[in-house]
Amino acid sequence: VALPIALTRPAAREAMFVRPHLVTDLVVLAPRDERQRRRLAEWMGVPLAGRARLLEALADLGQPTELISLLPAETPEALEEALLRGEAYGALTTALEARALQDRNPSRGWIIRTVLATQPYAAATAFGEHDLRRALDQAVMLALEEGVVAGLFREAYGLPFPPLPEEH
Image (cartoon, rainbow, N blue to C red):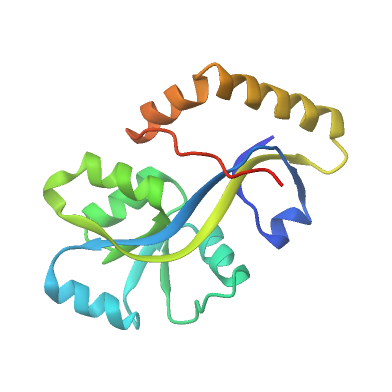
């Protein structure tokens, strides 16, 4: 079981996704500083910390990514450290992670500068694990109904759990 994975075409070829899924924005978190903001607006040569899979998700969504210089930061802690040490001018991350970073570092003046795309996320299992996926579907629904997911989400991000997308 992998948690969470962006629902992209490449990922869908490798895994079966649990329902329901969460939708969040992919954003650039940047300093409020005017000089750095101008550099970020140009995108060229400006290192952004972030996960390689987010850059892949942007490319999969048809967003231009060739001008983004990505400083690998594969965990939330590594992302935060790269920003705090000044190794990156901003972060390519999810809106949820960006808000958590803002909350933990209010004196830094980081703001969500750009929303690049909206991306669904979900837990996933290996192909062929139909029984496991059905069991996870049921467990997630039960955890949602009992408020467990909302509590864990608030604990992790300090935010209320967002509404889930409608199933079609």
